[in-house]
Image 1: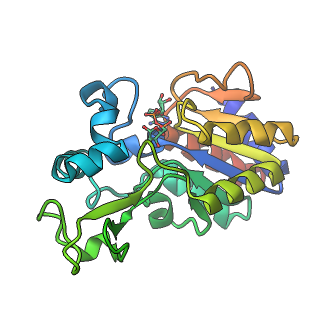
Image 2 (image 1 turned 90 degrees about the horizontal axis):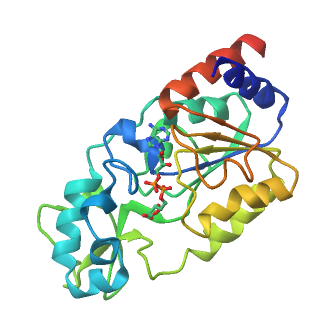
Length: 246
Ligand code: APR
């Protein structure tokens, strides 16, 4: 792994426009479970039962109960993986983070340009009048929380069966095709269209570097190399090496 850490630091040192694509794996060290693989949410729940728009419409209280209990909406804090990407931004390397996560931890760590591809849990939206509320301003012990119009509030996140926000999709394609290095951190790269972004970057001539304890469908097809490890530990080592050579 040391050689790959050194390689990644050298590639970052020579890169001018870095983009990151992140998934649930970068937040596992903050206590938020992944969706797939060992300990994944979808091992315990049927995603069509709790993360599909039809399920939310049918039984909002059931969806709310599980999401709040499992997603640690209001208690999780950034970890070294998030902080490492924020440091890369401060070093003038990383421009944009495209995240599939709805936890707001990249912004909490200090990244300023974060595309929330699947929306966010930091905001709620009324299912009747579309009024928006900041989640931390709402008493989510009352399940499901209600709008002043009486409507039910839902997370402002993308559920299965819903479209990706057009501006997020458009901007993600733009930054993916514009970067010269894409860090792909903690995603199983099986959910579309997010998993398309490393391919867009590769086809536009960028280097693609994966950080994940496991291989993904990108590893042997698209990625230049995979650093097999936990995001927090790997990002710490890369930043340390980068600071030495910069
Ligand atoms: N550091 C880095 N990667 C990790 C870590 C870690 N500490 N722990 C786990 N991983 C990796 C796993 O090996 C796996 O490849 O993170 C990945 C998590 O994959 P998923 O759980 O499938 O999460 P993600 O890719 O973000 O899922 C995409 O699917 O269910 C939907 O909307 C949901 O945004 C989500 C989308």
